[in-house]
Length: 79
Image (cartoon, rainbow, N blue to C red; front, side):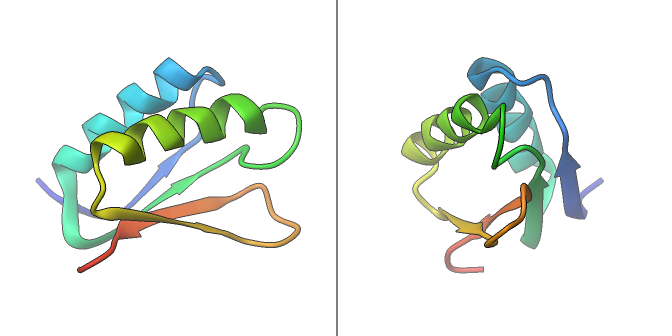
């Protein structure tokens, strides 16, 4: 089964985020989107660090941040 949209509101530690993103990358469709909560605010540092670790290992993803929102978006660059 593949998913077009995955929303992650994970445990707020970089390693947990990385684990969730790796699992999501295996089941997301080619044009799929991964949304993550807590990209701003109290937990943002850990969440963004986990995202950065994922993106170092998966260079075909890009990060999109929305002003005034705690939601961040990951999607494949060349979908």
